[in-house]
Length: 399
Image 1 (cartoon, rainbow, N blue to C red):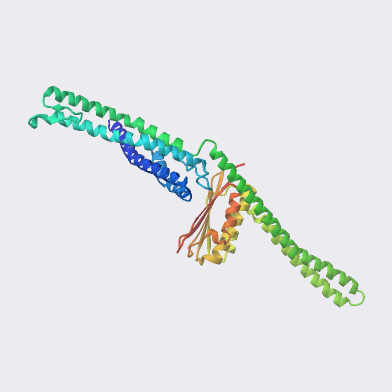
Image 2 (image 1 turned 180 degrees about the horizontal axis):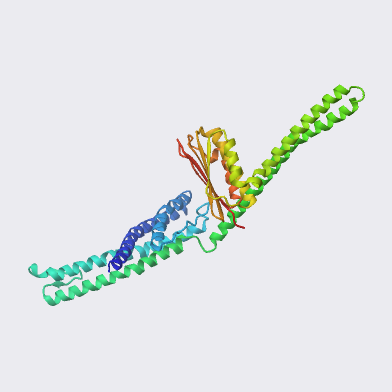
């Protein structure tokens, strides 16, 4: 019985609040009608996009309310462009018309029926205490026991009718979901747009990486090897006439070759660190922490091997983040956590620095986000002024 009463009360309350939002919907509809009428003479045209955006604030409240009623989230359907051209705006207007014309009156009845029924019962019970009787809420005088019985029956019927608030509340929530959620197929369209954007970012990042490798090889190893060839050629010419000078040039050529080999190893490590192959992600990240300029603690909660591309991405994310912490955070300590499941790798990097990290200001954070989005992963940055700064990265590992 208590559960049924709670369900009944939740339906009555939902519709009663809906009466308030329905009244607001009516006001908003009339306000938009005035703006539209003014736009016919050219006065209200600039106000239309502003009015459409302001309209979305009460709709967010109604979307959250319906989501709680239905027990499932209702995502926002809006695109990033002009609200006038957004298809969701037409659905918002449909909700204004429907909820303003129906929700207000249904909510009034849901509130009035149980109160009116209770008043009928009280009138039927107390009419004899008042000389001449008491007028009922249904416009007849209760001045005898037969009329009191009729009054009580009407009160019971009104309270019984109020139990229809539950299906009406569910209907109102479903109607809000139908009009205020993304249209059918919109999620797939948004997903295609998102994948196209991440693919373009991945191609851009890949192109930038290739240009960096080419620049490193051209300016570093290639220049040193060219010097080696030149020095060996000169030494060959001088060998018969000036052996000492030739040996000196050969020594310089050996030093240049050694430096070129070191350059090549650096470039190879920047493509795919050998540590990942030899020691796995946890060992490679531990090596990064050991080489860090600030004390860094590594907590490996999942040491399962992931696809090579995912491990390489996580490695470079950690390396770039530690570089940022060293350069900008003014931190005394950093912590790295590797966690996840067979299908997901989660990396958390925390520092006790000054905070205030801003992705829009560069510092490698935008590059980290692009690298993660190329894997359809997510990046969450929390960095209030004064710290701490926490970077959470989640990378899918499935095929």
